[in-house]
Image 1 (cartoon, rainbow, N blue to C red):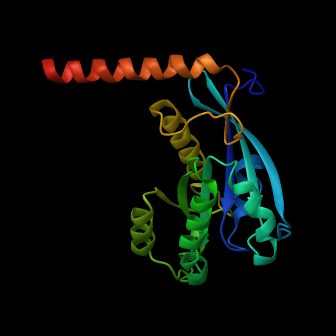
Image 2 (image 1 turned 30 degrees about the horizontal axis):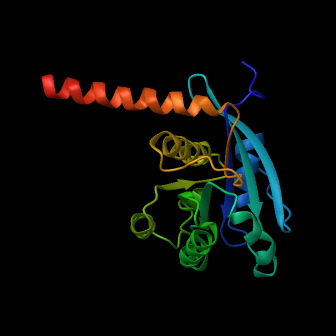
Length: 221
């Protein structure tokens, strides 16, 4: 299978304070590497990864890794509008990074209008939980995720735990949003691109039919 061929392209932006581990997560997901010391992102870094979201459906994931420092915000804000997905990342050992998540979320939602961005909340550095360094409880994180209407995942770029799950959960959320019509391919917006436009129409029709058939079966049961 040639993964350079793709039906869809999703732009996903990494959001969160500086040093929470956004770049480390991307490095682990795209290259399966972890570096104890990694240079802080200056402005925006760019990564690409290919994923099969369901048999025969290939997606090109474009990741924009934004710098968390305030002095780079004017640069990173310009990338919000053309993103369809956002990973909201905080450091489980830093209460401040968790407290800022609402600000990151609100800022993106405000700037992407009239387009739609889907999010996943990620508590990073779960490997340090056993060392007693945890400052943000799972209960508090899940409560925030509920308020924002997003899924929550605890991950560790160091051990690799749940990193793949976090990225692929978001990619599949976007894909399902496309099929349901929650997310639309629109001219002049680069959040989602479709290499063969009629493919989406066919997939939506197929999903609608499958949903009808499911309801029919339930009625007849």
